[in-house]
Amino acid sequence: MEPSGLPVFQAPKRLAIASDAIVAVAFVALATAGVANAGRPQPRILLSSTGTATIVISVIIGVLLVALVALGVKMLLDRSKASKKSAQSEGKTSATTTTSRSSSASGRRMRGGGGAVHVVGGTDEDDADIPRTRAEKWTLAEVAEATGEFAQENVIEGEGQSVVLRGRARDGREVAVKRCKQPLPESQALFLREVMLVTSLRHPNLLSLIGYCDEGSEQILILEHMPYGSLASWLRPHADAGDSRPPLSFDQRVKIAADVARAVEFLHSQPKPIVHRDIKTETILLDESLNAKLGGLGTRKHLPGESSRVRVQRRKGYLDPEYCQTFVVTTKAEIFAIGVVILELITGRPPVVEEEVVVKAGHNTKRAVTLVQWAIPKIKDENYGLVVDERLEEYDADSLELFMKIAMQCVNPLRRNRPDIGPIAAWLSDLSNPNAASIKALKAALK
Image (cartoon, rainbow, N blue to C red):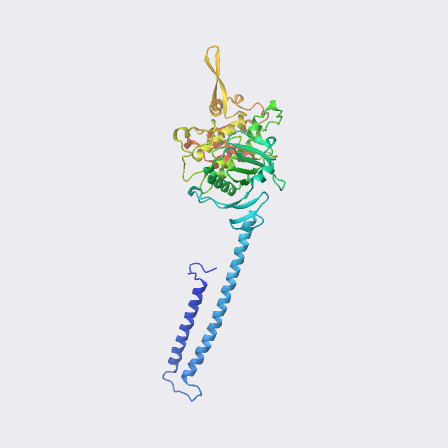
């Protein structure tokens, strides 16, 4: 390491400087010898003054040559040490993403548990600052083998633009395979950039991407399998289909909300904030311990600045009211969606509900309204009994009220009046681990 503030020269230049120094020293020595003898009586000796100077110069040159050789050896040793450190650093980085390497004419490729692995990249300027990451690349044959040739019995979800199947990798891992039903060739580059982005994002509350397949026009994601399914299926189980899972407790519901908030906080805290665009109870998945992970990152969009005009993949009920007027998506749109999810956790109802209205005396009808339109007036009037999920048996009244107030802050119709994700994540974290001090602080913050 060169001293801070000093110019750093490459090895060839260092040697040139050393050579120039030898010539300069020799010249000074010769001049010094001449000056030293000037004006003195010349003794009767066997060597002349010129011979004396020659000896002095020879000795000096010899010493300098030894110093030059020592300098060269030192530079070689320093370079060797630096190379070893660099190799060790690369080895540590590679070990986190792959376990073996092989060379290929098409570029650097590696072997993983499901198939070939390569460095995925994109050319879109919007994604230029996404770190290059390695993701498992599966062949279509490997995906078919993992899912039993895409057997219908392995289908977990078949609605929308994709079908999700249960699968098993060759190493025994249980995986979820998300296959686009009608992939467009022109969207292939975007698909690969999405793979690169999702692979670079690691957080305990984000669903992990294991691999992908882009063979032909295929757009397939191999994802971490969440055995307990979606939050929506827990809040609204199909009893007629034999779904007899127990209701989530109040504490479990608050913890799930806190998990989701932490995931969104991580996305929003990136150097270029990431908008998920599809936060809903169907994309919130649960493991055996009911820990929540946010999936569905395939529809995200970067925010180049504060906002970006993009198409929103969102069902009615989760849509930010201001988006309908401005068509501008910001991180505050995500806050609104989180508020709707909290209302679903409180009420057990879907984002759009049917409300009975009186048309005229003796004649009632039903109309579809959003959960926000249905629940918020009742919460403001403190008619909590009309709102709380009837399957929710035990809960602390103060904690429930605070949970409702957090939801109300999130679904404020004006974006500027909604809090950022940081305070929301902190409030939900405190509410999921309540004590007298945290409850008191929350009451002060949310009054």
